[in-house]
Length: 376
Image (cartoon, rainbow, N blue to C red; front, side, top):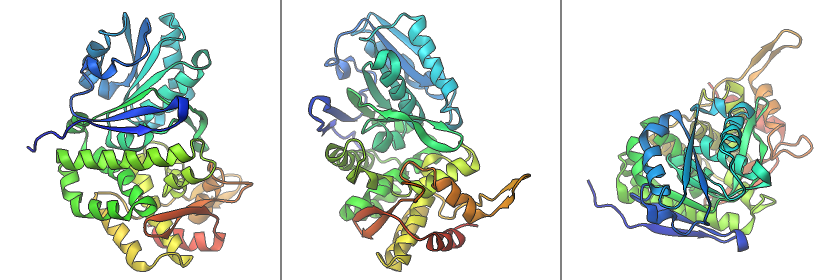
């Protein structure tokens, strides 16, 4: 086992809403990690049934040094539970414990827990502070950073939510030791994403270190998380509310969200859907003459090496009233309700050249070709 890397700090610059992202080992159970948070009477740890038994006691012990009361609410685990019903469990706990506006919420878990905790914090008493303590690779490199909070709707992923920044993000790399291999691979999809859209040198590094990442080599994981957070922090600092530049962080997500909604939330992990979506977006970029086949193959091979799917599922649907909706029609219908769509026009994050991306539309006929060629 390699020596643990030192604790690193990444700053996200948003004026009075600026905060730090800490990356390192052993921080989750260390009271000193949370010493600079504002004083409050109560804290609420929001976690799920999988993570609660692993890390809730450590975090509660660390927080007990700073808060008179530390409550825990345990949610069901899985994307399919990212709903109003589950969100209400957080509100129920806050109200049952007579929490006030100085109560601090702590999101202990993956992206689902982080998104719901952030949305609850944005909504309860019109806004209370919260802290992200992500325990999955995907959450550490993506969803915990930047203030996007949401729940799903049956017709679209993350369609109901708010932009609401945390006070602090604590990426304890030791949580990777208990992460299932499938979840680790899903997180690598969001790591890989940053290369084609923002940093070709980082893409080169991921290619050279993919085996070390899959083996959970501490120094490799630390660098992957830190560099991913640096890129996202820079982008969010330029465009907090996704009015322009920040949208490139959704590379692979237009196709990916369609896969998640079309299959039913939880069937594929978010990172698996994004991985396949990146392959499809790369093929669309090639068909538009933006990149060559060599880079499409290079990206596809890396995604495959990470243990992720590169072939899309079929999403055709049978409706008693309208008959069968074909695969490409189903993808297109789902993508038209994506948040990036404008007046029904689907927007894609496309690779302009390796290391650079932009958001633009594409002819339906071309998108159909990509779907037909990339799906089973």
